[in-house]
Amino acid sequence: MTQLTRAEAPGSAPNRNAQPLEDVRMQEVYGGARSSVNTILVVQADRPGRRTVILMRQAAGF
Image (tube, rainbow, N blue to C red):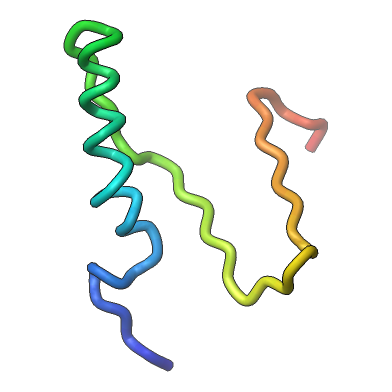
């Protein structure tokens, strides 16, 4: 098994790239509110055309 460094680990790219931009946008739109990366979905070893992700704000009966 290959050991991943923090820079290569899943989830590190959103923290480096998208989060700083979103943080600036949040501060401009909401007057000082800060953003953070709290939940990250990692898909590994997926075959093309076989992925469906549904994000819901409420429980789905489980």
